[in-house]
Length: 242
Image 1 (cartoon, rainbow, N blue to C red):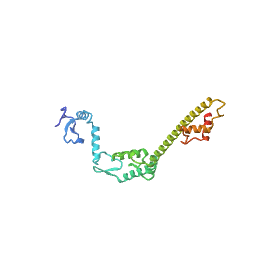
Image 2 (image 1 turned 30 degrees about the vertical axis):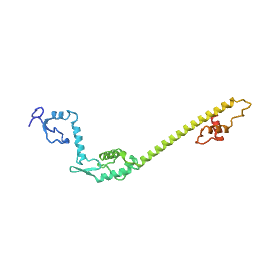
Image 3 (image 1 turned 90 degrees about the vertical axis):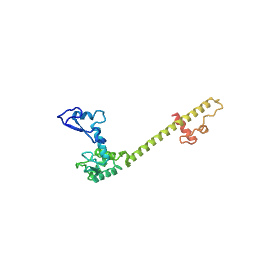
């Protein structure tokens, strides 16, 4: 057939179009001119060339076959097969080991000082190393976050410890504030009772011992959760007056 299967155009370059895409198992073709071929791949929005190329690439990658002009980091092509590159696998293992105790910048320096270079013989920057490792792990179904790095865990422990310490300090300050308010309320109540008494029968002052006994009898604990004593009440009353 020397004409387009769709528009019957002749004397034009014809493409062999797969009605069922090769990436989906199609084997037979029909001749289409370039305009018709283009329309066939965009009609339903799920048959675009880019989508079909991605599907074919993914199928070949999972089958361990060559799927691009350049092998991904850590691998090399042998004919149509993709196999691990021992040198680059060694580089990857080194980076993973260095990353356990080093930042990306430190990894870059140590990697370079160990004599490792990229495929063009140049220096691999920290961004290049990070991106390459991320892609390598993605091909294996892993993520960089899956790796347990010692310095990251240490930072998390420090942050968690600092947060817990801050929360404990805030809780302690709140408890102290509540204790002062409760004790101040009791002292005010005692003072009102004191001044309501006849001046000829009331004592000269409300002693610290009386205040301490009243607080303890009402179950109001001191700042440390224990019982009140005379010196503690004296310091509290000075603080309330200041």
